[in-house]
Length: 230
Image 1 (cartoon, rainbow, N blue to C red):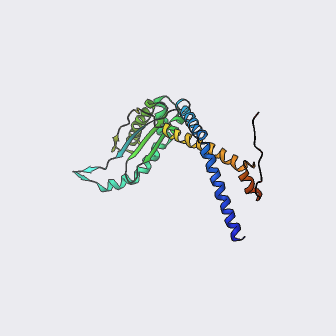
Image 2: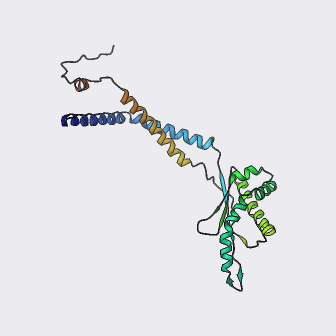
Image 3: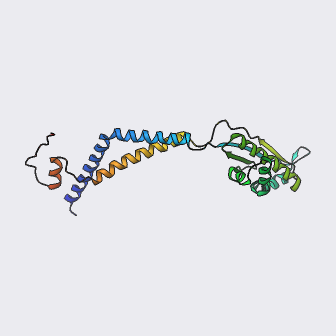
């Protein structure tokens, strides 16, 4: 390929991008309308069709034993080793089944709504429940803590589990996020409208004016026939 051909191809690409930009600029109203419509649809779906989720969290801590005012570091090490065991006990069917029976709900609902986690670099365990009912979320967490403490005492003879943070009743939902869904809807609207215009631009093989005719045919235009509407 010669240098002249490379320059010609680059010029054609620049002209095409310029034409595409002009098309997008001329159709900005359609793009704006598409963005607004998709954002409104996303907002309506979020508000009226997606179930709201409410979350409650409690945090528990296996407190190290203190002997005559001195912390037993052996107990601290033992606690570190036992934290993973506590997490697995909370995830197990035994505790979750007892909680389900006390609340008169299905055990599968407990398993699907509860998240148990050991907070990073700590011995603190967080128990979180997310459901469609803020009161139910709090009740699940409260019962999980109560049943776990009882099981730890009766089965493992562990009495040092303390509650760091009690579960509170959620006043607002944690999901869905209206702002996030509006943003996603707006971006989707922009993508659809710009994509449509881009495809239409790429598939358009019509010659719209004499300048385009001269460009694609490589010969000067001697004249044009004007178009008159009836």
